[in-house]
Image 1 (cartoon, protein in one colour):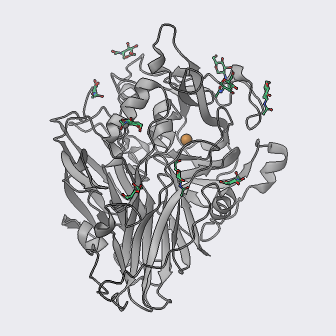
Image 2: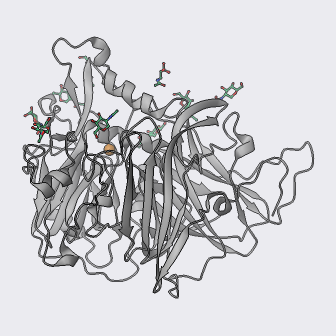
Image 3: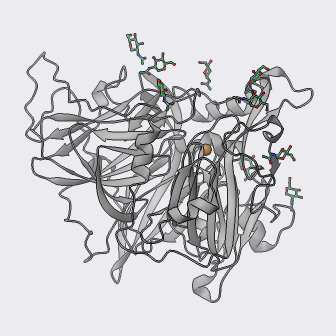
Length: 573
Ligand SMILES: *[C@@H]1O[C@H](CO)[C@@H](O)[C@H](O)[C@H]1NC(C)=O
Ligand SMILES: *[C@@H]1O[C@H](CO)[C@@H](O)[C@H](O)[C@H]1NC(C)=O
Ligand SMILES: *[C@@H]1O[C@H](CO)[C@@H](O)[C@H](O)[C@H]1NC(C)=O
Ligand SMILES: *[C@@H]1O[C@H](CO)[C@@H](O)[C@H](O)[C@H]1NC(C)=O
Ligand SMILES: *[C@@H]1O[C@H](CO)[C@@H](O)[C@H](O)[C@H]1NC(C)=O
Ligand SMILES: *[C@@H]1O[C@H](CO)[C@@H](O)[C@H](O)[C@H]1NC(C)=O
Ligand SMILES: *[C@@H]1O[C@H](CO)[C@@H](O)[C@H](O)[C@H]1NC(C)=O
Ligand SMILES: *[C@@H]1O[C@H](CO)[C@@H](O)[C@H](O)[C@H]1NC(C)=O
Ligand SMILES: *[C@@H]1O[C@H](CO)[C@@H](O)[C@H](O)[C@H]1NC(C)=O
Ligand SMILES: [Cu+2]
């Protein structure tokens, strides 16, 4: 390995590799894992916090499987807070009980409790990840899910020499649960993070962090695969590697038509697989990520996290001389043009079957709002601008999680009073969504409203951002499905002129769409997976304010189209 004085080397895969017992069943395997959720003391930026982790690791263990394998993960909660785990992007066909979002598909695993998630990976290859789906626990409870082709199958590109995971995270000099509780109490925006991280380490541009900078090894002439995941809580990130081109080959566990770029932009929830060729002089090059902050004037964490791409034959810096790795240029924080150029470069590898003859044509606005201070409430609980409280909504409905049953449990057992099925298919009032919105429209209604879909329905959703309070980019994630992104644009969606922009030939398949700031995006999918599936903004600050809704998809015909029975150990509230 290359130069090793100065920083302690962390070889990504050797650090994160999990020893799994794998039982062979024909070709497909079943992987068994134990995830013990525990309180762990973690020191970063010279400060020690007690945070929740899986097995004491931050990030948590990387799960490595082949397409077609099954996973059985026994989660034991030995921490002091509720937890659930979501397997982000996994289709969970007929296994919605294993999806994980609290109060949507299950009640939380309480302290002292446990739950075993059982599911299969089918037809997905590339990179996904897993994370807690309760409050802000996912700030420290997350890890990668690497899905390689079935044994005997190959990648649609030459087999990479090495394969590395780069998890981009966010770190607070505080317990993240205290940060969100404080915001819920005050009604204001939660504190911004103190650092971004790569595989848990902020990197040496931060004080007190140089020794732990992550090293990604490479050797001259190699072409390696890097699996980039934005597992941060609240920030879209630009990502780049000094002097090296990135060839994008996959995203959200679907292959894409390869394209080359200097910079990636990932919203929280999104993954991007890139090939990188070691065609530069042997040296050390920074891998760097920092914010794409699309909202004007809103505070954000403007720090930069780094790791080091290190050629094995890189010369060691002479003693006493600090040899700084080559630093890349990152786009300006507000460089929406670069973000857009990137998100609009995605295509499926070849012609795909895009759903047509749409059965359900939905138009869903997404954005922030503010509520007036409740009568009699202290000023300390109304710390959003002008003595208000922040909120957010889809189609003017601010989603409220149930508390006594999950949506799926209530649906399956026919328990009334937990949700209603009247989520509106279009905004209750049409207005200039991206203009100067009248104050009378800023305050959404609260409720637990879901939208019912018949099995097999062909669904189109026009997602429309609003400029209420402030316009910004929202990473919109749908559970249980991958969807095609047909088009995106700025301003108000106009069916008369924008329909002609739809890519009906080779649109990309994703589970999280970047809804442009002050703009729109159009997605399509076939509702062929029964269950209760939350669609939400993946900025956790916005989910907490209600930027979510749920699709309730009926069973179809026969076992393959029917939700399985709930597992016996499914937590109840
Ligand atoms: C949030 O930031 C403020 C101002 O820096 C600080 O006083 C407060 O303690 C922080 N809250 C938490 C939960 O860390
Ligand atoms: C890093 O440390 C220096 C010197 O103590 C200080 O001036 C600077 O503000 C610190 N930077 C950060 C980001 O904390
Ligand atoms: C980051 O934000 C802080 C606080 O707003 C500001 O003082 C600083 O200049 C900013 N740094 C960069 C690199 O933009
Ligand atoms: C981006 O920020 C710079 C300075 O921070 C400002 O001059 C510029 O107008 C901004 N651009 C956009 C598109 O908001
Ligand atoms: C707060 O009130 C001031 C003065 O009325 C107004 O100019 C400003 O736009 C208000 N801000 C918000 C976010 O409502
Ligand atoms: C569940 O909670 C809701 C809201 O608090 C309440 O209206 C409903 O009656 C409860 N249902 C049951 C079965 O306890
Ligand atoms: C937005 O509309 C309000 C009232 O309709 C008006 O007072 C305000 O000046 C407008 N703001 C801008 C930036 O046009
Ligand atoms: C949302 O609903 C509230 C309550 O009915 C109403 O005051 C507000 O104008 C509505 N806003 C929009 C954007 O429909
Ligand atoms: C944990 O979950 C239970 C429902 O299973 C709920 O009653 C309780 O309030 C939750 N605790 C916290 C701290 O959110
Ligand atoms: Cu959002």
